[in-house]
Amino acid sequence: MKHLPKHLRPRWRYLAVELECWPDSSIDRRAFQRECWYAGQNLLGDPGGARADLSVLQFDFDSTAGVGEALVKVRHGWSDEARAAIACIDAIDGEPVGVRVSGISGTIRAAEEKYLGRRGQDSEERHVVFGNEERVAVVRDGSVDVRLDAAFAGTTDLDYDDSDYDYDLA
Image (tube, rainbow, N blue to C red; front, side):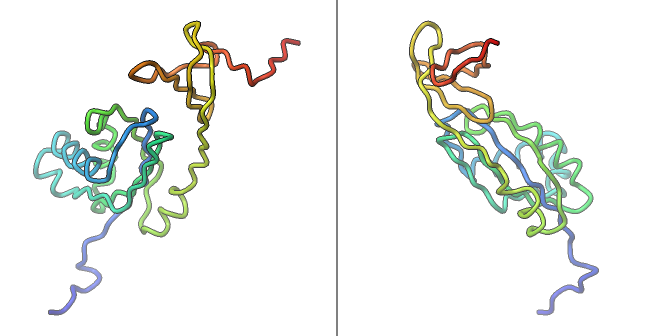
């Protein structure tokens, strides 16, 4: 069987997607793919979701830091609708998640070079005082997630005391 000529083959766009969740959350590729399909169906309807054809090609999620990234393939001409559908995702397997499309590209290679793998976020655990108790916190890019008994609490610099810093009040 012969291949289709190049002008008859479907064209694709590739969306680089960044994911942010609470530390110690567990999200896998299958769950993210399912949420992409559901979001496409809910926002675009069944025919629109099928035409957009949101498919997860690459997925990487660091559960200790709570950050990840994915590469989603979408049909040419449906990238705006796909961005809107992906923006509707607010939870994956019951875990609240923040999703952001960092860029669109015409090739997988360009998407990887421009948008993926550039998350230089390093997370570290520190001991902080929160609610008059010493607790463990995960610090990344200026945001601090303090571990409570069964969950995490997102905080700002004013909400906790970190004894590792020397504050200069001058």
